[in-house]
Structure formats: structure tokens, C-alpha cells
Length: 275
Image 1: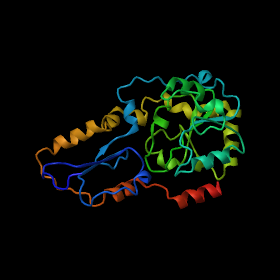
Image 2: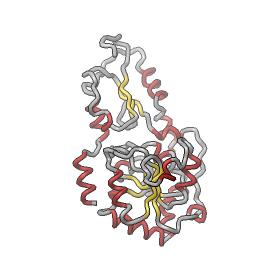
Image 3: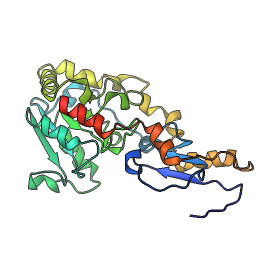
Image 4: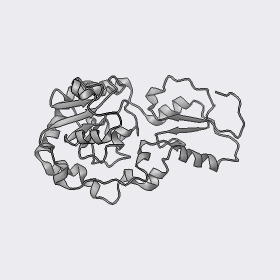
């Protein structure tokens, strides 16, 4: 990493992962000019939602199609990182006490499900998930706006996603399109509500009502265009092409941590113990 650079040179700090994964990384003080991360407070945004830009996506609205194979309460999850900061594995273990939770991928205890779908085979993943009324979208960290391909690649699947904390999603995706762990005081209370939705198909279908709207926040093309990763960064650099570098981020790791607002290990433990 060069110590001395031209006053017209810009240095970019990039992370597509949560701030929890970089908290111990060394970063020189007052060195970087801009940030490029998934968070909207970054100078340029590398959002996982960028994959939706310029794509034609069909959103199923036919209730009979959505309800196919949804008569029994079951939860699916594709998980390959078995020990996480968010402790999703512990939340899943609690859920499994009260209902059927089928895990696919490296973290499955069922040998037949470890390699059930080839890596990047989204067609296979979709076929599996749509056999379940609910599927897990629990990230490896609980951080504001940290929403990865686990959500965006599957938001058009005919299955209701289960996320960690509502506040991390409600600013970005349709608020009535998902279920959050912290909507409930305990895992048992959550499972009771999921069973209620299974027993009342019209209430279940309410989670897909957003698809009938002409305006879906996460599909806002103007917003997505501004989240073009390196393309957005290039636009930023062009605007400042002939300007001397004035802005220096004193401590970029701490700055990223502040904008990410990740739950601490203690906060997650408290939530888990009470849940």
C-alpha cells in the first residue's frame, strides 16, 4: 500500500461484507478518501440489489400457484457457514424444537442434503425452497442494511423469507413481505404464528400482496442505478476528477462500524436467551 500519492489520486476502501468481518483489520489513519460498501451511507454503494438492475423479473401473484405444496408447516434453509457472529445456527436450533426445519448445504446433518444442489444452481435452490411455505434468510451478521444475495436472489420465490431483525430490512424491502425473528418474544410464539398462516391461506397470501403494486421499493430502477458498485464509484470520481483530495477518513474501519450499526455479541446473546 503506497504511503505517498498524488494529491489528485483517490484511495478507496471497499468491503462487500459486514463491518464485523473487518473490525480487526489494519487500516492506516487518514488515508482513504471514499468508501465503497453495501451501506447507503457510503460514498458509493455496492449493493447486492444491483443484480436486479436491468433484469426482467416475473413476480407470481396467482394465489393457487403460490400456495402449491404449502399445506404443512416446514422451513427450509441453504446454509454453508455453520458458525456465525449472528448465531443463526442457535436460532435455528431453537426453531427446530417446535417445527420441521430442513437445512441444505454444508451445515446439514442429513448427508443427502449436503450437496443436494450444485453451487450456483439457483434453479435447483428455487425448486427446493418453493416446496416450503417459509425459508431462512439469516445473514452471518446482524447489521443495518446488510442484505445479501440470500435475500435478493430469492425474493421472487413463492415462499416467505424469515430474516433476523425487522429494522435492518424495513427501510429497503417491502415491509409486509417477510417475517423477522424479533417480531416474536420466543421461538414457540413464532412457530404458533407460522402455523396460523398455514391454517389461514388468505393471511399467508397477504405476504405476497406487495407484488400487485406498480411500485415496489426494492425494484426502484433509479435507486438501483445508483447502486452500481464500481460504476457508481466511477461517476463519483469523474465528478471530482480535477479537484484536490480534501476529504480523508480518519479511521475508516470505525467509520464503517458506525454506519453499519451491527448488533454486538452481547445484544445477540440477550436476544437469543430470551427468545
